[in-house]
Length: 158
Image (cartoon, rainbow, N blue to C red; front, side, top):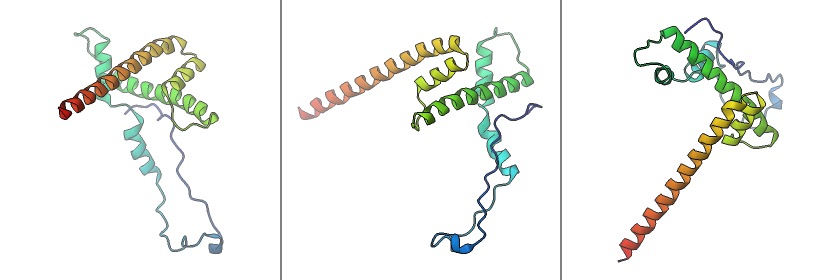
């Protein structure tokens, strides 16, 4: 892609060494030993999952410039890496908050908290407005769906 180092490369998974086979739980000795994950496999898997699709990044960038403007491929790739790193940065902070609160799901409020705590208050305010609009839209869609089901049920009874 480019000369930038990949964000947050996870360390390879290494199984613990067991010196005495008698220390294994029952039936564990019969199980086949999993093949170790190579650095190449980690890199290949992470490469495709680490970044947002370039087409999405390109579309967003094109919407921000005049129609006659051109965007170089290396500029798209740079923004792709930066945006992906930014998402990882914010999500990591939100995940840490969830872990401290013994929760498994990161919610919109956790992302807002992370953005404020990392110094992105201006963006958090805008995101808070969009989150409220999204939730209102979801509530309206749910009530419309229930109303449609209710009216269908009455029509079937007649």
